[in-house]
Image (cartoon, rainbow over all chains, first blue to last red; front, side, top):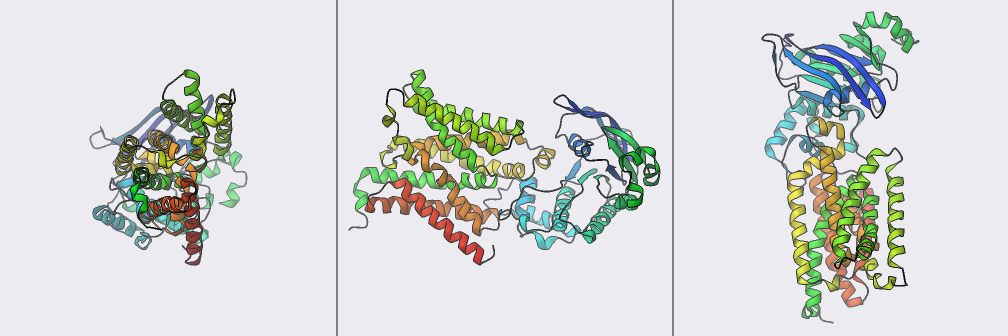
Length: 248
Length: 270
C-alpha cells in the first residue's frame, strides 16, 4: 500500500434528517448519522429497505431533504466533502470494446478516449491501479474482468479523487468466498491507512461482524445503530434477520 | 469498362462526396448507438420521418424537410423522457410509439391515393444530392466532430453507470438528450438520400462489425469509420457499374463485412 496517511479522527460527516420521497412513496425518512473518518460503517437491512436509495441520496443522484455536513473539528470549519463511489456493477455487455483505461479516463479526464491516450492520465490511472495490484488490467476489456478484478478497478477509480467519504455497494454476484474475504480485507486496510470514512451496503452479516466498526440497520429510517455486537443482539435486528445470529 | 468513367457525371461526383461525409458520420454515431443499445431507438427515429412529412403536409408547410427535422427532434426527446419514466421495458415503449407514428404518417400521406409521391423516401436516392445540400451535411459533420471531442468521455461515462457519472457532476440527462437530438438530426438530414428502410443498417452495421474485433475505444472508432467509408465508396461504385440502387448495395457490403468480422472475432477469441 502506498501513500499512508493515518486517519486523524478529527473530522466527521453528519447526516441530519435526511429523507427521500419518490413520487408519492416515502422511501427514507429522518435518517440521522454521524460518520467518523477512519471508520467502516456497514448498512444492513432487508431487500427494499432503502439501502441503495440512501447511498444515491448522499451522492446527490436523488433529491433529498435534510442536510449533509462535513466538519473539521479543529476549527469547526465546513469544507466541501469529496466522495468516492464504487457501484455494484457497470453496464457492459459481452464484446463491448471498453478497456479499463477507457472506462477510468472517461470519468477522470477530458482527453477524448476514442482518439488518443493521454500520457498524464495514463500515468495517474496506473499509479492508482497499483494500490490494488491491478496495473496489469489497464488494457483489458472491462467485460472480460472477473467480479473481483472489476471491484479492484472500481476502487482504484474511486480513490483517484482523494475522497473523504467512500460509498460502496457490495457486489452480490461474481465474487467467490476468497474474493469476498479479500474485498473486505482491502476495505479494512483502506480505512486504516487513508484519511477516509467508508459507508458500505452489505449483504453478508458474517463479514459485517468481523470488519465493521459500526452497523446501521435501516428500514425506511435508522432502526438501530452502534457496534456490531450491540446491533446484532437487538430486538430490531432479530425481527429483520430472524436467522441472522446463527449466520453471523 | 473504364475505371473512372463515372467521374464525367456531376451527379456521381456529388454522390461520392456525400458518401465521404455521411459514412464517417454514421461510423462515429453508430459506435455510441450500439454501445448504448439504442439500435431500436434510431430505427424508430427513421420511421418518424414519414410522420414528420405528413405533419408538414397537414400544416401546409412548403419545405417538408423542416417539419420532418422538428418532428424528429421532438419525437427523440419524448422517447427519451418516456422510456426513463415508464416502467415497461424500453423496447416495448419505443415500439408502441414507432408503430403509432408510422401509421399516422402513412394514413395522412396516403389520403386521396397520393402515397407514390412520397415513396421515394423509403429507399432514398443519393444521386439526387445538390452541392448546397452537401454543405449542410458538412456542417452537421463539424457539429458531431465537436460534440465528440468535448462530450464523448462524458457520454461514455453516463452509459457505463449513470449514478457514478452523476456523482462526478456529469449531467446525465443533458448528455442523453443532446445525443438523442444529434441522432435525430443526422438521421433526418441524410434520410432523403439513404432511405428509411436502410438508414438504420448503415448506422448499426459498421459499429457492430467493429465491436466484433475491437478491444478498446480507439480501435472501435477506427474500424467503424473504416468499414463505413469502405462499404460506402465501394457500394456506390458497384451500384454504378451493376446498375442497382446505391443504398441496398452499401448495406449488402456492410453486412458481408459484419459476417467476416464476426467469424474473425470468434476465431481469434476477441
